[in-house]
Length: 496
Image (cartoon, rainbow, N blue to C red; front, side, top):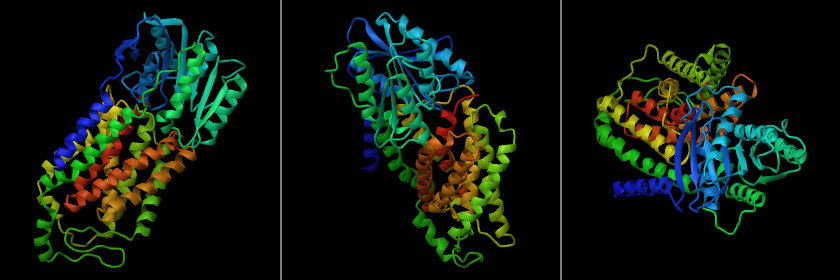
């Protein structure tokens, strides 16, 4: 029955996420090295056009819901991948390079036979909002600009860009709220504070889409009577796929690792070698030494602080991925420190091999790692962001995965393989990483993705606990959980 439920959710999620609707026509092209996704309305004739620009670590796919909503209203939409993002394998470059990318997209939009070239607008989010505002200010032939989560207002002047609408989430950092208010005031435009959302979730808020479409309808005199599709449609499909993969994980783990209860019985009858015992420590067959929660937090915190400082002075920019080199060094150093500390604490003691090591660990690792990769990549690709690694991203994914695997292995050694213990260590490491961003040791962009990182780490901890139940060896547990966190990082951070 569970298998049937999983298959039904997979089919439903994939259908919701990718099937076209309302007769919209979609095309993909590459113009002067810039990947472009076009969305055309069903009605014939010439339509106003909109270029949609994503933010830092985003992609055209991340903004697809804007294409769905705007095209359903009657706009021709072009979504681009900036250099270093999505399927664009060119290095990120500077602001001038981003402006050239946007110019290519606008020129291509105007060249479409079903576009009225005199009626064009640009919409951007975060970094893309900054590029859109600068472009609109320099090109008065752009009839309207919508800036979502605008990072700064220095390029805004009186009526420059024309008809500027700024949108900002009520839960965003003060800098974004200040920039939004100032840009609207200086330009003579309008500001909307979208309630209950932050820097990323604002992209799926129905209020965001209603305000964007309403502003453009007023600009171009478009009939606003037609209902808008939900911007949550693709995200809902991705969510169903995630649920399906989560439901399928435990049965798969049991099939490749065996029944934990059956294998625990002989282990319970066999006397195991002596362990260090005491408050907060586990002992018994197959259990690693583990300190109390307080000591684990202190040890992981100290290791993370030292790693953050060391990573800041090493030449991590040799890795052609923004922030990627820092994360690789940081996670690897923390993991090695935790593993080394755990080994030092157990020096001279006899440690039994883990029973999970008898459960076909190589086969289990191959199957479960493959499943983990599909579980994170398929939902992302269907409904969120470009998740298929292109260009140099496959080997960069390998490096980042290795770093997070070492971190998970060290945390497992420190906490006895506990999922909750791993989560506690992950929280401490994330707090230190956040502090490093605040202190200027690494990019401030880390602050914007902490909520997403937290969700991924809860996912990792849950699967770790499932694998612990089936007594999987740590050499299997660590890479499986680490891939769930590493994959989104490797495929979204910009190439440099």
